[in-house]
Structure formats: C-alpha cells, structure tokens
Image 1: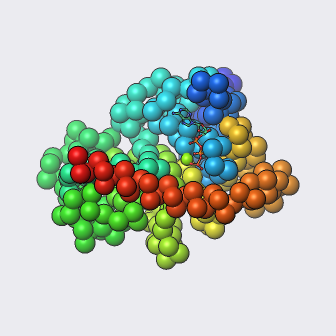
Image 2: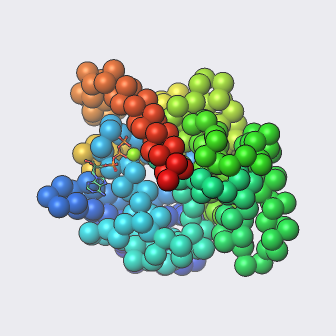
Length: 281
Ligand SMILES: Nc1ncnc2c1ncn2[C@@H]1O[C@H](COP(=O)(O)OP(=O)(O)OP(=O)(O)O)[C@@H](O)[C@H]1O
Ligand SMILES: [Mg+2]
C-alpha cells in the first residue's frame, strides 16, 4: 500500500477496506494471487466470478478465517491480515457463510441473540436487550414466525435469512455476504434485495458475492471480477459487465453453466443433508 493510502485510511477516509496484493495458496494451488482493490465506505461492492475463482477464499481472508500467504488487508487504518476472526468481528466486519452454520440446537431467536451478545456492542448489551435486538432483526428478515423453532428445523431459504440476521446482530460496519440468495425463488430474491438495501441505507458497507447477475446489477455500486484467483476487472457495473474481457471469462464458463446451476442446487441439497446429519448426532 502506498503511504498516501495508509495515512488516508488512518484519517478515516472514504475507503472502508484496502485489499493489497492478497495471495492465498493451498498446497500447489494459488486460490488468490495479487488481488488488490479498495472498498469505498458506503459501497455495495459486487464480487463476482466463475465457480472456484476465489470469492469465498477472499471473504475468508478478510474475515480472518485464513491468514493470506501474501499481502495485507487494512481496515480502519489497521492491518488485519493476522487478526483472528473473533477480533475482526469485534472491529466491525461480519460475514455470512456460503454453507450456512446455525447453532442447530438453539432456537432461531437464541441464534440471533447470541450474535447480539457477543458482537461489536455485545459487552454493552444486557441479555434482555440482546433478545430485544434479536426480535427486531427476526422481524426485519421475516423469521419472527419461526423464532421459537430450533434452527435445525428451518428450510434452506430460512437458513439463509437466519445467516443474515446472525451477521446483522454483530452490528457490522462492513458486512460480507456469500451467496445469501442462492436457492431463493424470484420473490424471495426481491425480498432479500430489499433487506440489503435497508441495511445499506443504515450506513453498512456491503460486499456481495452472488452468481445471480440480476441481483448483483440491481444492488451493486461497483463490481470486482475474479477469475482463477486474479482480479480481471473492476469498476461501475455497466462498464464491467460490458467489458469484452469479462464477457469472455463468462462465455468461457457458459458452456458449463447448466452443470454449474445443477452444482449450486446440489450444493444446497448436500448442505441441508449435512446439517440434518449433524443434528441427528
Ligand atoms: N481450504 C481449502 N483447501 C484447499 N483448496 C481450497 C480451500 N478453499 C478453497 N480452495 C480452492 O480454492 C479455489 C477457490 O475456491 P473458492 O471457494 O474461493 O471459490 P468461489 O469463487 O467461492 O467458488 P463458488 O462460486 O463455487 O463458491 C478452488 O479451486 C477451491 O477448490
Ligand atoms: Mg464460494
């Protein structure tokens, strides 16, 4: 990072997150290499790319799940690549998981209240206030109707809603959303977009990973495209999506599109099965 960028961040500038030359190696595979971009404060940054292009890996790096092999992430003037995930969360970065991870034996309400108790402002919140916050969030995401059910009872779309409510309960400044609309039908996608717009309107910076272009186009203020672990384009949605380079990357993968969409459905089904198996244990 340039000294200017760093001092600008320290001064609390217009950039929420600096991602600088991030590389992540798994054995012989570089899942990410040389990825650099800034996420403007108040942006909705759409992060797109074919399957396996490194989107989830980048979310794992930013949220402290993985320590990158190279590079740095700067948030609020602080280098966070080495900061553990719970501390990243306390700094104000929350994320959802592509394969949802509720506490299966807790109720839906308890799942969200746990976030409110242990998140950024958790230390200042009583148990009662945490449950009140959980109630507000459950109403916001449309889960109040199942608040007393164990999380393991939820359908996949409801598990996605719960994943968003749990992340919001952490009171994030930056929220990373990894395919929260996968498996939702058209009207559920519209509801999810409305919810994300409301979250954004409250000042939260969003990084949104989705394969659904309609959703990405309608919500993003800017887009970054990954392919094979590298950033291949960045800019305003209309410019990025009309770029021949990006079209080529997608055309290349379009042949496999049918297979990919089956894979996405398959992935959801397998995730549900895995959760059921966990619950049964
Ligand atoms: N923990 C890991 N160990 C080894 N390889 C990994 C690991 N996590 C990811 N990879 C590999 O890194 C590459 C990028 O994976 P990643 O999950 O980040 O892609 P993605 O863009 O999120 O894909 P999708 O759209 O399918 O979710 C893939 O080749 C994947 O197999
Ligand atoms: Mg992914």
